[in-house]
Image (cartoon, rainbow, N blue to C red; front, side, top):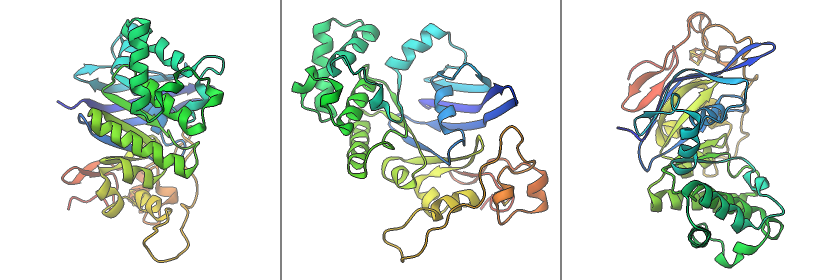
Length: 320
Ligand code: SF4
């Protein structure tokens, strides 16, 4: 049994203008200790997938179908109270710019101590000991436990948020663009830290990113998302070197290769579809140079083209 099985997940937003199918039939699995990246442009459904798994959707969002099996329990069906406990003890999430969510008038250590006491039922002394261990784990001197957020640098605050996410020893950590607000040097340090923690603690990770280099450095496999659907799913090597879907190809081409020849990187023409009024057939067809009549009229489905490599494309998705 996989640690996480997301099956045909559908999350819809009910807006004044109509229904937005933000996540529409997403399926993937995650094993213990494994890391998957959800990759794609803004609005492709990456964050909504994470918010659906953790059941932190805004009011207008609803899981309209599918299952999220975590250790065999369907999170879609479990009651609110049990989900709250699952969120801290089993699954935790680090949001983009999470460092700004620290309470500025409370000592950083106390904010984590409070979370541990609340969710683990630990005494203050036990929780403080745990926070000191967590600080060392995320490479912050444990003597800084009594400092306030304004005394921490941006990278340290993000490390503190990672420490908070680890406070209850979760089996799965979700990072929603956890390094986007940081400069490249600090970004590299945080990514290395996440990678090290994942291996040392045998944690699984879902990393949401639009950055293929972050995916390549940190994850085992990746799901490329477009307009609420997974269009390609496979190992990081498959995605970077043996990709088949034209959208994945465009994403890869839009990233510079430091070992390659010096040439202009290309951007992806057009923009993602308006999900209130999506095009028929393949949702990528208005931007795809290979589109055929079939692409405009019939939606492709995700098919396994080689072991553990799935592609959804009429032209490039033939079984090899
Ligand atoms: Fe392009 Fe057609 Fe494949 Fe869609 S199905 S990605 S339009 S070739």
